[in-house]
Length: 293
Image 1 (cartoon, helix red, strand yellow):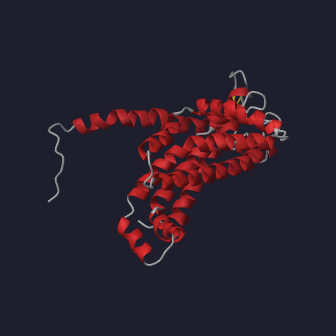
Image 2: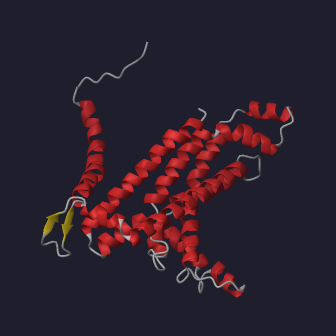
Image 3: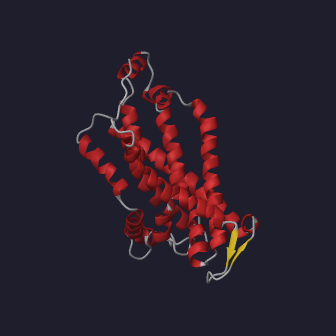
């Protein structure tokens, strides 16, 4: 027999969910609808005249070489961030799951970076890798490496990848550690009795049991890399040098806020949303099949 919650007042359940529904409608659905509507308009920089242009903004964007370059940059950047953040989180989780001295302090310190704001995280890495005031940056220059992320596009890309991935490592660490602690010890002990080594036990038993956690983190990290790394890029490189680190989310900002191309910026945001939805759907269609629940 299943128990059901019974409210004496029929309006009470709707009143309880009304604040959350209002937040979702005002801050999520309404801006999305506005972006779709704005993407079909062309407005002068002064906001005095608006013209309905159908899909002209989309055609102009999809034939723009700078936008296509930002698209390639975004895929390279997002792939690197996801790989670095997830592999580092998994490695740290495996290390923390062992019986080591001071494990509680070790786990607590690894959680802290997730509470750091993106702009603050960028400032921390700036003081590390700046060629003139950074500790590691000056060491690289003294060692004969011409390190300068303000002039070298490859150096700038490496820096924003490291900073963005570092910001996400703590989140991945928490979920991987929880997944490792839920693996039945009897399975690992049985594999050890059968003669399986440490690597074999991890890749044949532990990692397949982590597939639900890995799939969730893969999806979440992909969304983070596409949509939530604006603060790091803006604080470190501002899309430069020479658009080397200008991702899709940052190009939406530069075209809409700086260049005042409101229609083109809205069209870019719609395309970015469709790209993220498509990649997420592909992951659920093809990768989820390999997940063992």
